[in-house]
Amino acid sequence: MTDIRLLNPVSPVWREVLSPEEYHLSEDAPSPRAIIVRSADMHGMALPETVLAVGRAGVGVNNIPLDELAEMGVPVFNTPGANANAVKELVIAALLLASRDIAGGIEWAKGLQENGASVEKQVEKGKKAFAGPELAGKTLGVVGLGAIGLMVANAGVALGMNVLGYDPYISIDNAWKLSRAVAHAQTLDEALEKSDYVTVHMPLTDETRGAIDAETLSRMKPGAALINFARGELVDTGAVLRALETGALRRYVCDFPTEALLRAKNCVCLPHLGASTPESEDNCVRMIVRQLDAYLKTGALTHCVNFPDADPGRLTTARLVVLHRNVPSVVSSITALISRRGINISNMLNRSRGAYAVTFLDLDECPPAATAAEIEALPTICRARILTP
Image 1 (cartoon, rainbow, N blue to C red):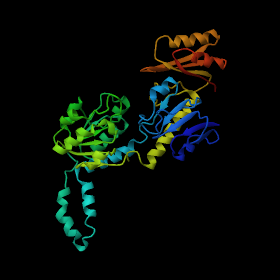
Image 2: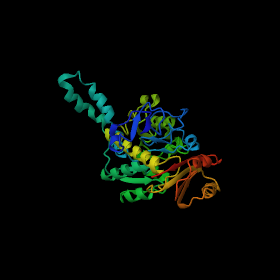
Image 3: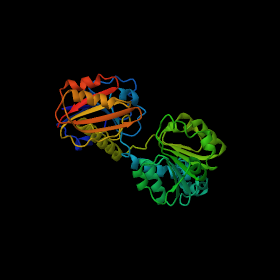
Image 4: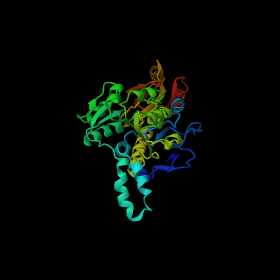
């Protein structure tokens, strides 16, 4: 039985993917082979030595110490795209909230409940205060065309909007899926200057933190609306508040409330509802347990965020899986050790990304169990495992 520890409760749909006879998921597994986390903060957490992988049932991984786990030889997986439709639908709602003062109108209408028979007259008299433009024919700038941004851009086209997409790192797969009606913004400035609505779908990294700042906002079309359902830290809150006060920004709709934003006029805050649908939670769990199962059984790395993605294929013979730093001579030191054992290497795959890499060696015979420990003793190795069919 393989134990997986849950740091947060997850949907029971994992049983549709994993056999309960083979896997046991619980919040108190003492010696887990893997961990599944949603929002729990893993920084500073003492990780059991038995843990081989961490799965984030979601996209953002800022609650996980990626480099620290990489040095321990623990790959971290996430689930990009699993909650994309849920977020896309809420962004469509945000576009409407940014266009018409729906939230203000609802609150105002609630205040009429004691007016009895005069409610209808009050509504007709006061409704013009909450009017706003239609979306059709307006320009939507989508910054970031990953799984969510792609769907938002295509939805904007369906709503009759002129859509500008900006993403210098768009994947080939996403480029194929993007509607031909989506225009390509050559620069971020072009997307900002031409758009009536700008929606942000960038990942949160050290480079993108605070990317939407006073300078960025100054390049937006005067009176445009900004939508942020990606990460709160992408936006400089102080700069947004000043832009709202001056009218440079007509409205800000986000999924990340702060005290200052909640007090601000023309700011609509939702309580982090982007992925809060049962379908999204189910999709994330199905996806992450498939990835963990594949890694534990074959070494395959899919949607890995601290090591490169790599799939060595079906496990038909003994396989050595080595997670290591991406520096010269590592592979030769591994193969030399196998050669000294007199074992033939039938197939080899090496992939690298940034500071880390993975090497798979399919062997004609299974090496002694001590081989993994000998490889791990090399100074550039994070972890080595021997898998058998």
